Image (cartoon, rainbow, N blue to C red; front, side, top):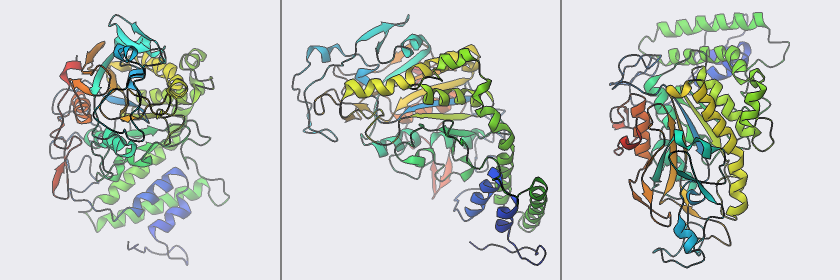
Length: 495
């Protein structure tokens, strides 16, 4: 990339980038530095510096959710709870008495091996199932708190994945494609609808406190969409939840010096724009810089959970060693939603085969550990959103990348299964207490009302007021969609 030189300061000649590092300390400086470094990113579409540029259909404006939507929206904001590793459906929400009856039998499923193991014998769930709520929804004892919320949930009992390998499956559930390089759902929503709040990001990711999931940041990527739609990773459990939120301690960085440097940077940018009126990329970078500066004032308040009551802390399990880290993420997510973040994604489970939902070795010990860490916080979050009236225009989605096998891996583990798994939704536009679809008698394959991730994505966009077939971005000569060439709205669960 060619870096243009500007008039000298004193005896030194500086570039905009060098000036940034010298005078633009803190989150704002780092944000713009990264954006300037990406100046040569190829875009086969309209200029990206104007609000929602490249959107031939929507034209929603910078705030979004005004006029121009495809149809009246039911949802204003989305919270996605992603259980990383492949939740065992027959040990959580998909009750199968046939597994009890045929426990220990060898069944021919027409395969010789699963993903990482040979086909074992049928294994019943080691956890009792009970019916809950007026809907009579079956839930295993690993989720005693969530069991009390079933009448507020709509279950998709026959979700299926094209792959049962973690990396491609995670890409599929987040982007609609099994390969990297495509925008995730949060990025598409950010691109289509824009901001609600001026001082917080549109799309925020709260990862597991122990690490990032499979594919790392690829799950939160804007792909070929403008880089501004990247998910912003915030770590509420870390000593520094947002890196470089404040300037580093240094005698060389003073408030007066930073202000002078930013004024000079603004003058350089103005000159740059005067000669390039048809190139709006710098304008977009300046807007991102301004947001970063605003977050220096707004983010500390959002992340300060000491403002919550002791009753709320107890409800979420914030001070419990087992539930505390995920509870902190959930409570932070609620605070972000009510302050105008449009899409928040909360992750449970990091990459790797231990201490997440990837229960290969021993379902009896591995699943209760991870389920216990999220059960109370999620139930508290649902009640909290409902009590505050946020569920009236917020959609909550709980999902995973695939399910598990009905037969054993080793002695008491379960291998990957893309044939069927469970997703549930709650909140705005959703018919509470409903169930759609079913798996076979072993919970091996989805057989009735089968739904794919493209259907889930189409439904979420529909609730946001967007026709999934009309939200497109032209890339390499193709009008790309989140749902590719697939997907239908799952109307059976809509209110």
